[in-house]
Amino acid sequence: MKFNPFSPNSIVSTNLFAGRTDYVFKILGKLMQVQKGMPSSFFLYGERGIGKTALAKLIKSIAEDKDPELGNLNFLTSYYSIEKNQSITASLESGLNELTDKIPSSTLSILGAKLGALLTNGKFSIGPFGVELKSIDDKIIAVRDQLISILSNVIEAIKNTEEEKRKDGIFIIIDELDNVNNIDLCAQLFRGIITTLDVKGLGNISFLLIGYKSTLDKFFMADSSARRQFDPIRLGVMPNDEAMEVLIKGFKKVGITWDNEALSKKIFVTGGYPHSIQLLGHNLVEQDIDNNIDNKDLDAAISNTAKELQSKDFAEMYHFHGKVGNREKILDALAFAAGPLSCKEIEKYAHVKYVSQYISDLEKRGSISVDKESGKIYLHSHLFRMAIMSKIFNKIIEEDYLSELFAIRVKSQETK
Image (cartoon, rainbow, N blue to C red; front, top):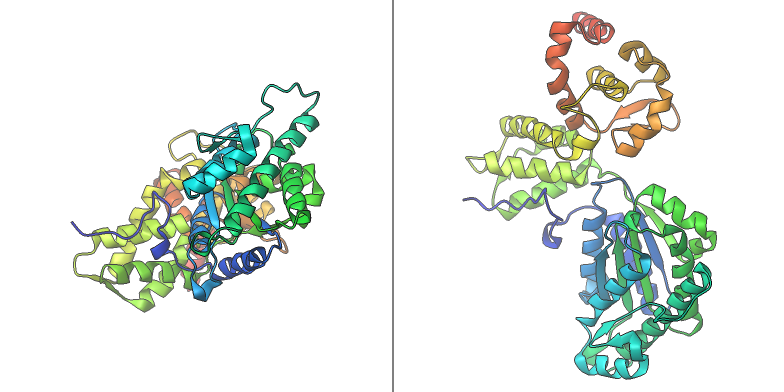
């Protein structure tokens, strides 16, 4: 069985990560400041499947790798993904406890003597410990002070130990912030921790929070002052050259050659979405029989990828197996038009009134994007278009569906 380097159903391994250079160097540049005691944190946001976790995994690897070409970073790092309706307190406690696995037992013993009930049996515990608190603010202050005590002691311990065990500071990644049950408390809590550590001369701390745009807005709405501590970083789709780089890196890994011209012409179908790129690469390697990817291989893999995505990434964007509603009719018109349309054009072709009322929800689902200048509406990607077209093709031919668009397409072909 042939080894397949592409992993569409899991996070991309660090050694096969490609592209995203600007994002990587922006964050690494700030981490170099954190090395010197100047705290800097980030809120990485973007739509589902855009590659946020894969990028964070790469940054975490570099941050602890001591690579002389990438800042010689040597942080104590942790990664934690928040469970549905979990509190930020429990999430940070779990993130901190991942750090304990990398702290020498001798250091943990010293920390335990200083922290008391906050560190027992080598694990951190955060909470009021039976103290009656009058308000939510009191609880946040108590938790904040406990976290500051833990972090300040850990930072001092890892910076002032023998050279071979010394670290630059702490880098904590908190993923899926959308799942937290108290987002309105988060910004205040993080700001208090970062500011206090900075004032104490222990600014070797960085948080990387990951979520959607809606969560970012709620985060800063609750405490706009947190913008001073957090850089918002929007992760967008990958440009075609970076998407090609991902596939080529995988092909090289297994010794497959490729038709560069054909690949460069058809890579756009993925829309620059990492999961689509990984799935296309996976299908290309799986179906290859002569260790060379050519135009025929690309066409077959693109078709297979579009069908697979119907039940994966695209399942929440379009009801492929359910009742056709107005949202599906809008997307059908965009798919058949094979290009951007205005709301008025969609209303005309799809026979849906007040299309504008559906746009926000379709954007949130990731089904469409809207050009801010022209107001034109675009479909997610060409793969999404192919997935929809495979669903509605017979309906167009046999049931006179989207007849106005069909007439325009026929007339366009006749004039060519």
